[in-house]
Amino acid sequence: MFSSFLQRHQDKLLFAVLGNLQCGEVFLTMPDGQQHQFSGPLKGPKADLKIHSKEAVRRILSDGKMGFCEAFMDGHLSSDALPELIELAARHDTYLEGESASQMGATAVSPFAAQQQRRVGKKYRASL
Image (tube, rainbow, N blue to C red; front, top):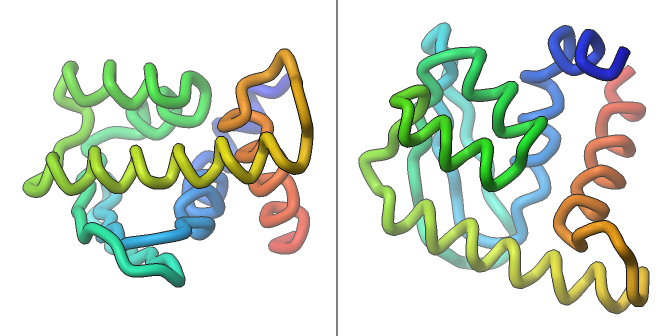
């Protein structure tokens, strides 16, 4: 059930996740050539991300960091500024982990996953 939902709305979900950047900028190119820019309120690295297939989007959304890494290794996405993209992801993770820990206390779910689920859900419901 969730997988069919994810397939129908995966681009919107990815945009919702990237729309919550806290620092830096990402210049995103989708498989169909559409380009999007996402910026956080704080200064940070500027990076590009080129997604070459819908499979990459599915992997990122369903498997998080591991899905991103596997999609990168398999050539489903690329970046001309990979060090900056990694730095941006690391800064964002640090922010999310600190915010999640203060809001949720100890939890069995990773702070990154819990925070992203809440943010994506709020953004998605607002876009309906």
